[in-house]
Image (tube, rainbow, N blue to C red):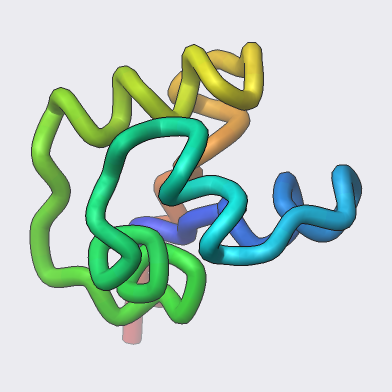
Length: 70
Protein backbone atom coordinates (compact mmCIF):
# COMPACT_ATOMS: atom_id res chain seq x y z
CA UNK A 1 0.00 0.00 0.00
CA UNK A 2 1.14 3.55 -0.68
CA UNK A 3 0.59 6.09 2.12
CA UNK A 4 0.41 9.78 1.24
CA UNK A 5 1.64 12.24 3.86
CA UNK A 6 0.12 15.33 2.24
CA UNK A 7 -2.27 15.90 5.16
CA UNK A 8 0.66 15.82 7.59
CA UNK A 9 2.75 18.24 5.51
CA UNK A 10 -0.22 20.59 5.20
CA UNK A 11 -1.04 20.34 8.91
CA UNK A 12 2.53 21.18 9.92
CA UNK A 13 2.29 24.37 7.85
CA UNK A 14 -1.37 25.09 8.69
CA UNK A 15 -2.32 25.10 5.00
CA UNK A 16 -5.75 24.60 3.48
CA UNK A 17 -6.51 22.64 0.31
CA UNK A 18 -7.18 25.85 -1.57
CA UNK A 19 -3.78 27.27 -0.49
CA UNK A 20 -1.91 24.28 -1.92
CA UNK A 21 -4.01 24.30 -5.10
CA UNK A 22 -3.38 28.01 -5.66
CA UNK A 23 0.37 27.81 -4.99
CA UNK A 24 1.02 24.65 -7.05
CA UNK A 25 -1.44 25.23 -9.88
CA UNK A 26 -2.90 21.76 -9.29
CA UNK A 27 -6.66 21.20 -9.44
CA UNK A 28 -8.30 21.24 -6.02
CA UNK A 29 -9.76 17.78 -6.68
CA UNK A 30 -6.25 16.36 -7.16
CA UNK A 31 -5.18 17.81 -3.81
CA UNK A 32 -8.34 16.50 -2.13
CA UNK A 33 -7.84 12.95 -3.43
CA UNK A 34 -4.26 12.89 -2.17
CA UNK A 35 -5.20 14.51 1.15
CA UNK A 36 -7.93 11.92 1.74
CA UNK A 37 -5.68 9.12 0.39
CA UNK A 38 -8.33 8.05 -2.12
CA UNK A 39 -6.36 8.75 -5.31
CA UNK A 40 -6.00 5.70 -7.55
CA UNK A 41 -3.16 7.24 -9.56
CA UNK A 42 -1.08 10.41 -9.46
CA UNK A 43 0.50 12.30 -12.33
CA UNK A 44 4.28 12.69 -12.07
CA UNK A 45 3.90 16.43 -12.71
CA UNK A 46 1.62 16.68 -9.66
CA UNK A 47 4.19 14.88 -7.49
CA UNK A 48 6.92 17.18 -8.78
CA UNK A 49 4.89 20.31 -8.02
CA UNK A 50 4.05 19.12 -4.51
CA UNK A 51 7.66 18.20 -3.73
CA UNK A 52 8.82 21.60 -5.00
CA UNK A 53 6.15 23.46 -3.00
CA UNK A 54 6.85 21.57 0.25
CA UNK A 55 10.60 21.44 -0.45
CA UNK A 56 10.58 17.73 0.26
CA UNK A 57 11.69 14.46 -1.28
CA UNK A 58 9.25 11.96 -2.77
CA UNK A 59 9.78 9.63 0.20
CA UNK A 60 8.61 12.41 2.53
CA UNK A 61 5.38 12.73 0.54
CA UNK A 62 4.74 9.04 -0.14
CA UNK A 63 5.59 5.89 1.80
CA UNK A 64 5.41 2.27 0.68
CA UNK A 65 3.96 0.00 3.35
CA UNK A 66 4.10 -3.72 2.44
CA UNK A 67 0.85 -5.65 2.79
CA UNK A 68 0.75 -8.04 5.73
CA UNK A 69 1.58 -11.61 4.75
CA UNK A 70 -0.92 -14.25 5.91
